[in-house]
Image 1 (cartoon, rainbow, N blue to C red):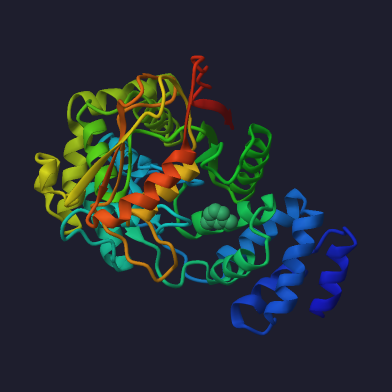
Image 2 (cartoon, rainbow, N blue to C red):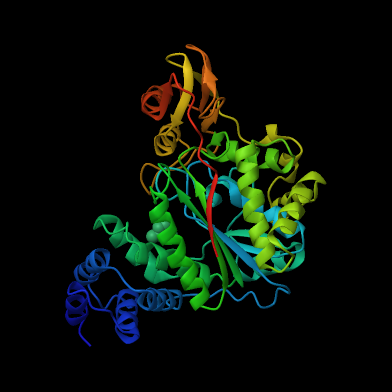
Length: 433
Ligand code: URA
């Protein structure tokens, strides 16, 4: 088999066989296929697409390229969730404890920040002494014992994706539905759960900018999950507005604790109850409506918050942050950002808000940058709220006062105030079964 023939076939819009896809994935993993040929094929896939069977074959080959986590020792149906990423998305820290507190094990491998905001691992590491570096043995044994663990991805989980993602990043081939779907789903398959709930974000702060694109990505991922024999559901949620009121690592952990203490913002609470409901339904805990009720009860009676505390203890963090959020890192300085005119907040553009937060130190400008866990942004007002000129609408948190200026410039582009009250779109936009 020759790589040049495979590239040519895809360039001409033809389907690739299972063997051809396996040849490509094996070659990219062992380094026998040079980057220029891999890049050419990625571009051809980007332009000509892949059908359902090719996308499944690509995902299965990628999932098999490295470690596969064996969760078989953990009794029960294991559920996983994945969010396609968004600004201020702390859902894992809320959902994991809710679902695990209801007896469904959650063994979650998470990543660091993609783009400008911190990932779940960065957020959890804002908890003093919390560790996400668990060996497979430790990871499985914590889930066996308390039903929940969140660990950083092992170095050898889907090595094919690591190479392909790095190439896609620099060859303008990230935005391709078969490539995004196979990248995400290969990591989910290798992580070993029995069912997966996908939270596909749509809007300015997300990969998918329109509901049509989001539906296509959701459908592609659900088809892969089913093709691989896993129960899979995708929930499409709005990311035109930031989720919750905080962006930044410790600030988001505080907000997650608030949601689990029944004190959180309505939008993130609602999204978490729907996602938890779907996770519980897939795990056989009842109908979707019954499972949503169960999720709400786990928050109300404090079970979910206790489960978060257990997880923090098991992962060597300071569990008392749950009772006293003041123990989380706090930035030295804060600055208020005020409304430039009176009216209604029409939009707070999520990706710009993410950049504003990154400029305060909450995200990585480059792969090598370090994150300041205390830095970030708190929204005092959200889209749809009325504001008066000069009224504070955002609070910026940073350890260096010099960082405020550039962040404020970004916020000037992020916040749009208009005279007419805007109509907020539904948070839950669709569910693809
Ligand atoms: N997240 C991933 O893991 N892969 C993609 O291609 C896009 C988002």
